[in-house]
Image (tube, rainbow, N blue to C red):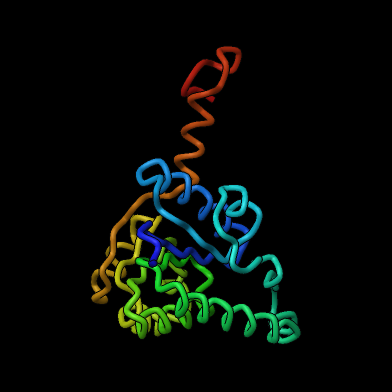
Length: 188
């Protein structure tokens, strides 16, 4: 018998994406506690109780030489996540930044009929703008965190919504919690 709980898969290939993914899981669980969440991520996502399919810290590489030396691991991660999507057929795939890997995985999801939600856009406005065509083809909805990104994507035919920067939410919480000895709530 199939599991009746909605299933979401989140893919965060970098430490910052892991942190943002963990905060996203908290928000999802607050609204829909019955949702099952699986992920490729790190310690922050694991701490939220998700089913960790692949530990992304194994993919933490910087620079071309390091990428080339870890190519086998990157390919293994992609193969594992593609197989997992095929086996599980989740209701939604959420991608967080990590564009080269995630856009390949988005193609797999698209073939499987799994909707793709991209949270925290790759910085295609700064470099490799040609990837916008790939995003338009493979991503059902782009959620951007910088205000100008919404117009950038919208004018290029990508379904997009500005959701605000998650670190600003965290900063607002920290400022609101400051003790009176620091000028009181809301004062630095």
